Amino acid sequence: MPPGGGGPMKECEYSQISTHSSSPMESPHKKKRTPRRKWEVFPGRNKFYCDGRIMMARQTGVFYLTVFLIIVTSGLFFAFDCPYLAVNITPAVPVIGGILFFFVMGTLLRTSFSDPGVLPRATPDEAADLERQIGNTEDVANGSSSGGYRPPPRTKEVTINGQLVKLKYCFTCKIFRPPRASHCSLCDNCVDRFDHHCPWVGNCVGKRNYRFFYMFILSLSFLTVFIFAFVITHIILRSQEAGFLNALKDSPASVLEAVVCFFSVWSIVGLSGFHTYLISSNQTTNEDIKGSWSSKRGKENYNPYSYGNICTNCCAALCGPLPPSVIDRRGFIQPDSQQSTAPSNGVTMYGATLSQSNMVGSIP
Image 1 (cartoon, rainbow, N blue to C red):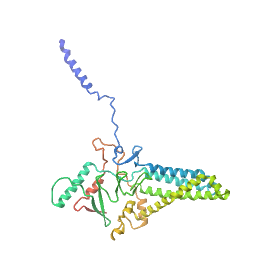
Image 2 (cartoon, rainbow, N blue to C red):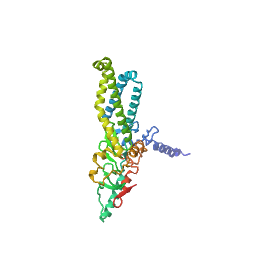
Image 3 (tube, rainbow, N blue to C red):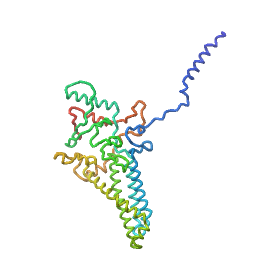
């Protein structure tokens, strides 16, 4: 072997070593990036807990006040009134009160922690496609083919059960909102069958949580009347034994409960009655306030969503199947997808499909 024969081999070994050592970032100890879920970049003004399972509005201070008032008032009733009432009247008093309390808290949390029916925003491609379709429709209608950007129209019209209904375009979500949907300015989301934003439950009230909201205020009405009635009964029975002033001194918590229930029962019962009327006529608070189906707008103006029967309207609102959530808030973000918008799941296509010819369709 010639003396210089070892040279090429050394160069080969050196080049192999230098190739692997030139990229220190590719080490076996490199940390993999944890995939992010869609709720972490959700565009609306919402709070998420438990890895996206709980969804609430950003302003939740009044919600905690609601929970505090219910728990404290009920706790005082169970601690200071129920022992006396169970002995002197019937043991069923604390049992019924406990059932009402747990039902109230269950429906409150179900209303507050759930998706009210938020509609996903359009992706940039879907928004551009919708604007393109609208532009082509306008060009055909005007007999021109000139290009250039033009904002989409504010409304479209569809026919529902013989009634003309306008669909509004949301410039924030880039979609034509379905019938009865509206954009909540506090949560910055379009909500299907939007009723109202309720700070007392810390969430919007819409298609997916309205029945739980109604059951909450209705059961809270019963609980408030129940506590108020039996607190007064407790004070009357004690006053018969030791006098009125001594009865107040012996149970000061009962006085506090009576005051809280007296000032809150009117608004709670009134709210329950108002929503009972809305359910019986298949309306939303938003529609009632705007007078969407008021006869003042014309004799031919009527509510196309009403079944014409109180029982059927109530069953449709309270007993129908619960629609699934259309926002995949716990899904993982794809590396090649836009992180600033949520998937639309075809909601934008609802408006895009209606942008044909005269932009007037019919819904069966």
